[in-house]
Amino acid sequence: MKIGSHVSLKSPHMLYGSVLEALSYDANALMVYTGAPQNTIRIPLSKMNINEALELKSKYDLEIIVHAPYIVNMASPDSEKRKFAISFLRQELERSEAFEAKYMVVHPGSYTDSSLEEGIENIIYCLNEILNDYHGNTMIVLETMAGKGTEVGFRFEQLKQIIDGVKYNLGVCFDTCHTHDSGYDLNNFDMVIKEFDRIIGIDYLKVFHINDSKNIMGAKKDRHENIGNGRIGFDVLHKIVHDERFMNVPKILETPYIDGLPPYKEEIKRLREK
Ligand code: FE
Ligand code: FE
Ligand code: ZN
Image (cartoon, rainbow, N blue to C red; front, side, top):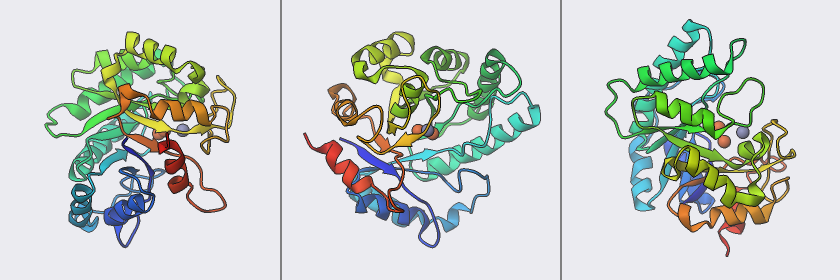
C-alpha cells in the first residue's frame, strides 16, 4: 500500500526535510506544497535540496505528490486572475517535474460571481493553456471538491466535463472528506466508485486524499477530522485504503494536528493494519 501524508517543506532542509519527515511517519508516499499554499512566493529550485531528497526517494521507493496552491483560481471570471493562474501553474508543473512527482493535485477553482458553467469553461481554457507544449512527466489531477461556496468540481459530472474539454491527459484526486461533504455516501463506497467509473472512468483515479470529516454527509463544509473521529468513521476509511482495485493508488492523509503534533505515524499504522 502506498500511504503517507501531507508534509511540510521548509528551510533549511527543504525537500530533503520533507522526505525525512515522511520517513519518520513510516510512510512510503508524501505530498508537499512547493511553498506556502496561501501565497505564490517560491524559492528557486537550486535551494530546495532536490538531489539529496531524490536519493532517499529512490532508496525507499517513495512516491512524491505536489499540491498546487489553493489561491490560484482557474475558474475566475477575471481574465487577469486566469492569466496569473496559467503562468503560475505552468511553473508549478515544472517544479513538480523537478521533484519527480508523477502527479500535481489542483483544485479546479471557484466561479465567484459568474456561474458554474462559466467557471467550467474558464477552467478548461486555463488547463489547455497550461498544458499546451508541456512534454514533461507530471500529470495534473483535479481534486473532487466539497462544494463549499462557489467551488467547481463537487460532482463527478463537473470533473468529466472539464476532462472532456481539455485536449491533454488529466487525472482525478478523490478526497474522502470532500466527496462525503458534497453528498456521496461512502458507507456505500462500491456504489460511489461505480458512479465514478460510469461518469469519469475508474482509470482516471490517480490519488486518494484520506480524511475523516467533521460534518455530516452533504454539509458542503470541507473541515477535515482525524481518522476515526469524524462522520465517515474508521471502518469506512480502512475499507477504502484496503480496496484491491486501488492498491497502487497513493493515499495521502490531510488530517489536523492533535495538540500541535502530527498524527500521521499513528494514523498510517492503524490504517495499514489488516
Ligand atoms: Fe486539496
Ligand atoms: Fe484534499
Ligand atoms: Zn479539504
